[in-house]
Image 1 (cartoon, rainbow, N blue to C red):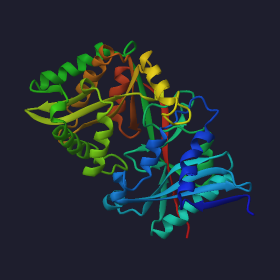
Image 2 (cartoon, rainbow, N blue to C red):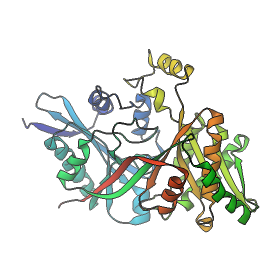
Image 3 (spheres, rainbow, N blue to C red):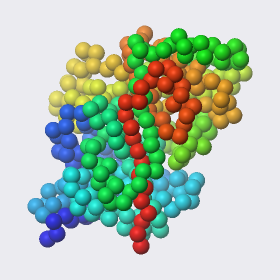
Image 4 (cartoon, rainbow, N blue to C red):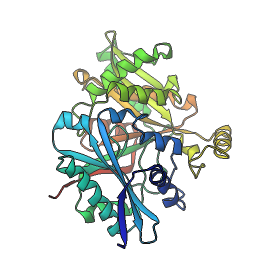
Length: 379
């Protein structure tokens, strides 16, 4: 028997092993935040994840000579990506491996072979399963716990990818801002100039009584605002509705803002509590029997003091007017009264100088670096 054997996930037992592997893999890592198993299973369920309306995923497990799982990977066809770019790029995601290039190489071989069978010519990732989900490899900032819906992995993963022949194709940053150290006076002066130039600009909170209408506006702005960003793929109506349903459960409407200019909604910013601060205490990813108690106990003692700003956008026709800065200022000013002195704004592409400059002017610090990698498929 070969030292490493990779096989496709074809039954419930293998699917359970695929979902279970990260919990064992990171068992001794105090920084890792285990996802809830129910959410991990939903992400891979075609009947519960809107991604499968246009995408396909083939998952694989790597086992050693003793039959023990030592790695996993998903090979991904993103129909919306191919529809927009027609570039022959497939993706890999859900990648986890022990520190052994034979294991990781066998996993990449399997994913690449399947993608070639789908008539694709390159493999990019990690994306779990798309750029609109948890995406990117953590390459710096390993001592800091990940924020909600952000990637985390061991430092050696980058080496495994590079040794296999992957090359970095994009760099992304996470910015940390603490109200105590933010240069609000300087930033506010800049935003006041924006209001003087556009006195009709108004920032308001999301109206929960019109939630579906607000979601439709946000999706329209999001898909327009990000259209020119590297690798961006617009979210389908079903995908965005799924995201909105998930966020609604934890959304504080006083931390979700819409920007109006001349009565038209032209921008938005949405922040979510960093649930990872309490989820990290549920080491096995199960709410029962004791996980729910730990979750409630953590929140009772003020377990969440951070938020993440994952969604911010301004229609392209209004870029360069400072509306994004006005949204950021409104957001940072409202944090302390809501009990959140700090936040992470993530992620920001390295080729987005306007956003990087705005966050650095506010006093934001780059505290994590992420990257995406790509390799041409052989054969």
